[in-house]
Image (cartoon, rainbow, N blue to C red; front, side, top):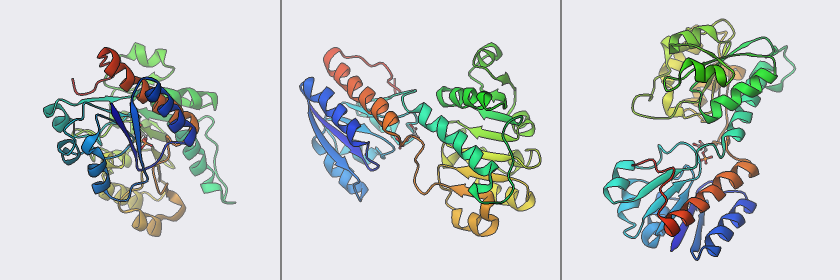
Length: 306
Ligand code: 3PG
């Protein structure tokens, strides 16, 4: 089978080698499309693909329609909001993710961003310490739990909100459960966002929530920019000069935020939470194994469009 590895943001070379090895040994052919300039390049490359491995690459209805032989798409990573699931299902294409495989990299970045803001973006200005502060984790999944464990080791008090978990499960994960998003924001010196981008979560974090945060609080977003109401964020930062925002997903209004709020805001230019060799190897090789298993045994473990 022809497996297209389409990564606008390429995997580390060592991960690419591992992916090729798994797939070639299983009898498949691997085609690489890295750092492509246009979405049209992906559409063209998909034409004869029978399987695809992607990262945040956009597998739109157009890509799926252009790939008549396509049977499976594996998103090497957690969030699959970049795949048109309805179009995939309509064309009988199985879509999978690789849950947990890049979580540690994202969790380490969330902690790093928190300290970066606490220490005023590594400028000589007097900062603060995270020890003894309260961290609220919004969604206690693979990344959220790792952030919580690392924060506890730093001496932080960890709260978590997750509508899909019981209090017992949150406590077993090492955090104190809270029961509403308002309570989470009102109780946390830092909030670390780990919710997926879904219709129900789009722009769900806005002025009302952000201004509930206590004095000097920091909002840390290593999830998706789409979950933030950017106008609300701007207004909140305007009305509350004590608040800060740090994100791995550059907001559309970042130039304005920087101009108005300087060191109170920081965004990475390109999403880099999962950009470690380890995460690339874990997620990339898992994706390759899932494709090999799918063709060898029909396994649909980790399918997200069942
Ligand atoms: C994910 O959902 O797994 C992360 O956002 C990583 O995305 P990336 O593979 O594009 O870095």
